[in-house]
Image (cartoon, rainbow, N blue to C red; front, side, top):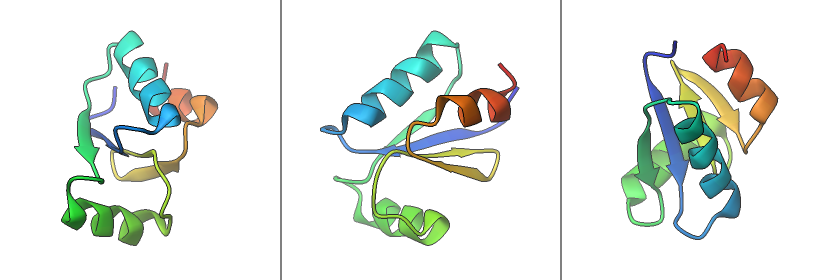
Length: 78
């Protein structure tokens, strides 16, 4: 089970909603970071991922860009 899961998202992003729903359905606790409201977090996620898009999901320090269900299942071991 993952120790730390963060999702960098915006309120209007449909893939962010799908990713959060996927994590919730699989009983994965996560920290939701709204990069639209938090400029420092937006800069942090660009530095970590090299991407301006969301969602960016960080699982125990590993970065997943976008809602990649296969990669999420693999990293979360579900």
